[in-house]
Length: 237
Image (tube, rainbow, N blue to C red; front, side):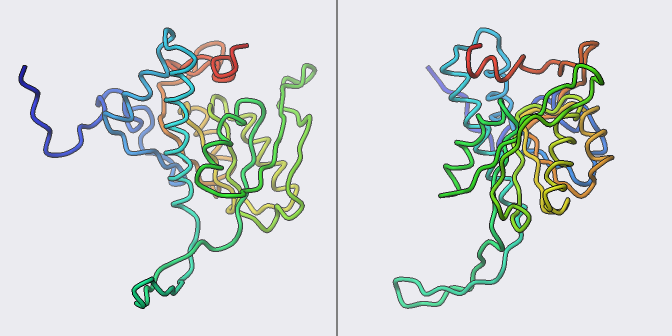
């Protein structure tokens, strides 16, 4: 059996599905993963309602790690000189300042492992935001942050950005705790155009790292095509 020859360059994702087809132009503060066919294949697996929980965990974790690495690319650096084992001097760079992760409960907790895999001993904060039944607005129910969070760069973690309400409330709470808007990087797997427009309109200095931008929201404010409830599929509840 003959195999298809390898392409000269990595194949790209389906043109109709790429993020730029859903929201163009992107807000200046929004960055997406490179829209390759491999990334689209990973998303196709986790979108499939018939994917087993084990495969959903494995492939969503692969994407989360890619997102965390991309988020770290946006942190500032300073010049750093080191000596190599050969006795040579290398003029490189090092990260400037300290970081911490803050997960929006409960789905955001699924992204903590990906952060810990690439940042040893990273501090993690948590925040619980739910809809107020009286006002229908996002309401803070719980938060716990490192005591020095105001002096850290914060990676805010939540896999899905639908309307943007919870994410905007989380940023509001972080800023109330002294974190400058420009020191927050929001990381998510899938975003809706509506959610990005709302979020970036309110917090233009927060960088947003998303893996994929979907077509939009349905009448129930679910992301379409989406992948369902991330927390339910991850934790089988």
